[in-house]
Image 1 (spheres, rainbow, N blue to C red):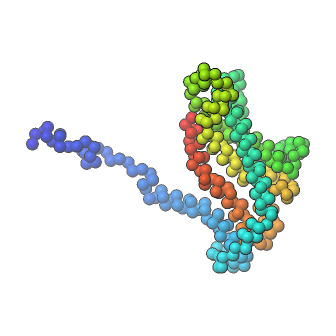
Image 2 (cartoon, helix red, strand yellow):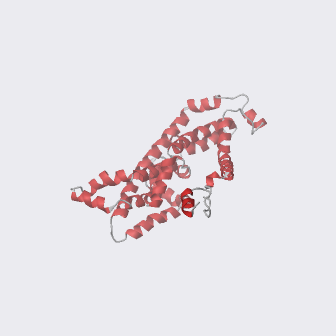
Image 3 (cartoon, one colour):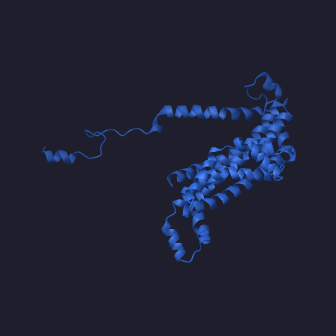
Length: 296
């Protein structure tokens, strides 16, 4: 056999080719990764499962065996919460606050991010740094002066006193996420739109808004979940039980029915369901939007 025939018979790309290094295994092919992930997921879901299952037990069962399963399953705790008017009133208040906060955050954040991303003016960097600095000031730091401002505006015991501060504190995150999306829009598209007679506002509505939909959805979801789970601000602003949001209602219900642990667990588990469903439905949207912001 000649050297030429040997070269012909050896097919390139075979795994047994001399001198070729084997391909590295992907990290998800390691069973240890799955094992650690399952442990982490289990530790995160165990408290939620305990609360949900605890709502199907009686107080005697919880006292006798705190970690046991319901024997028998009791549905009256959940039925009492669902049929009562307090729970649904608080769900309505939380929905109003969360929707109003989301609309305000998305509208104001998109307009501010559009100016910071697409226009050149003196002090643009300082203004962007000012919004970015808002991420370093949590609500707990500003709760006392914020309480004084809300009281001075006459917004105590009203949902507006919760909505407006939540919009203000959610704007920095919204602008930081949306600016890369809007900055990534090619200038050629804007120039072509202006040549075709499109105004600045028309370009914003017809081109900028559709192209930034992933970022808008991400910021809207984050604003909605953050508002729905907000507790500290409603605690300081709302004193009337009729205006309580759901997180504040859980604390009030737990104090009122402190001896009825099973019913408190049922109320708590029902209050978690809307946020869990909302987050699970839009989880990919959040990850995709944040990934796009990082790439931009």
